[in-house]
Image 1 (tube, one colour):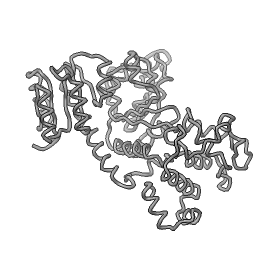
Image 2 (image 1 turned 180 degrees about the vertical axis):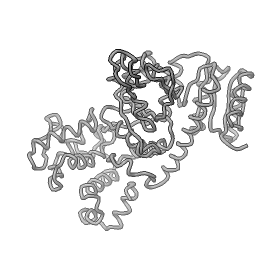
Image 3 (image 1 turned 90 degrees about the vertical axis):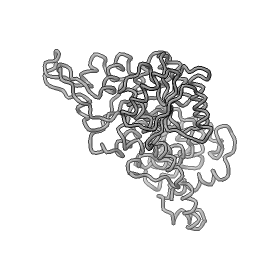
Image 4 (image 1 turned 60 degrees about the vertical axis):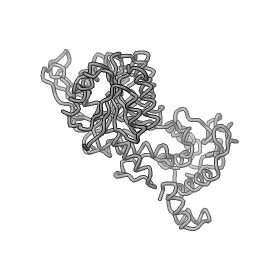
Length: 455
């Protein structure tokens, strides 16, 4: 049998057969049924693998969470869906933290089962492609122009960008997490530009700013006369963004009542304008973003677990700037150019980069830009110097940028990489000028740039 290999583990034989029948009707033939988790362990121990495992949480002997943990330690590439008769948020979050892709509550409808299986297998396909891409030096982007807004030498950020491009090809909802100022909307726009929907609208919506009273009118639109003041038809966000990408920013700040209304659109793919009785198809791709701890909000019952499942089709996390300090010199050069600083004034005075690299940037790239904007104003057309930086940054200027935040020296290879990439960026990525400035051969520089993913 060809196709995805799926294991179903449940101590209820009737339920096993029901799931098998539903999966086969959906076109999945390679389905293995297990009442005892020991049989699954023996299968993996014998060298057999699986693409997906559906696991009942309440198994006898080894419980479902134990089997999930065992599978993820022996076959990390196997996606796991947890199934339970108890809708318990703490158990669900515990399973997600152990590596489960989704968490289904019995009774599971045929539609929800097949939907969850398809999404989990799509995720595995994308991660398998990403594993292949990681072996390439540099990773190959099919649409590099979509990600031009990201200035980075960080391997962690490049991994996120490549995974984002792979997700862009499908209509799977995506959740982007990260601290304020890390570039979540920038990444959402890049995904849109890399997607088949690139010629259609990209519409950002600040979910925290939506009025509860006007949510349905704003989102679903309304007909003339639907309520007092509705003097003409209004299309709403879903219709205005038809065929494109709807970016749900700050979704963690959406009230629970409004979360339910949004969930219905994600589940059914339909909406009904206010004042109408005719449902309409929602032809949009959803990308959500938050700087909130959604798992914590779920535990405290301030965010719906079922909505979390729907928006977390693909999950991308942008690391904070303090975890990619090697990007600071590159970002400084890029941001100074954006701020209109002439090329001859873009190289900061000695000590500036070191002072910036020692700062933790709780506001991330947005904070860096604000600091540079203020410094440019104070420099009055000259190059920025230490005295143009905030006092708290000047006080830490003695910490060199080739030390880690804990004071541990960076490996020599990392210091060399940092220096070469900094000079390369400052000289407009001109290899000849960079090699001459560094005093090395052009072939040597090319070899090192290829090793850094800059070939």
